[in-house]
Length: 170
Image (cartoon, rainbow, N blue to C red):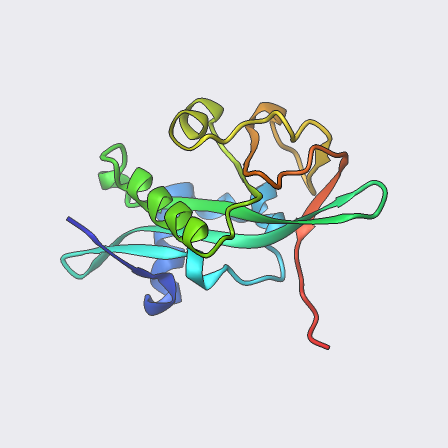
């Protein structure tokens, strides 16, 4: 049984190597990576799974925002990537990582507007993510519309573009 720890306690190179094994070295060209450019993961919502001293899975969550066509800004939490060591995939570890992040979001009251790009049947069935509110959202790259999912009581059903949420210190 793995132990879940803050991802910040794991060597970043080990996380990157796991992401390469899980998603391939060409993963940086995906639209989700454009949403994460220039921002760091949310530490309180990002976890690593360690088993027998080895990194076997990770989940990271990121600050993004929806800028509506009328200029209003809606903060969102981008969930993912969820990476599991290929030999361990389909064993429930990814689901456990999702629970770690989503439970932490609830505890910290950061669960009002969450989004991800993923399989609607899977993420909808287990965690209530759906595409009902995302029809007018645009991303900085291609996305299959039915895979652009959101959940939470504060998810805006408006037209606009999703981008990294960069906060500037005053």
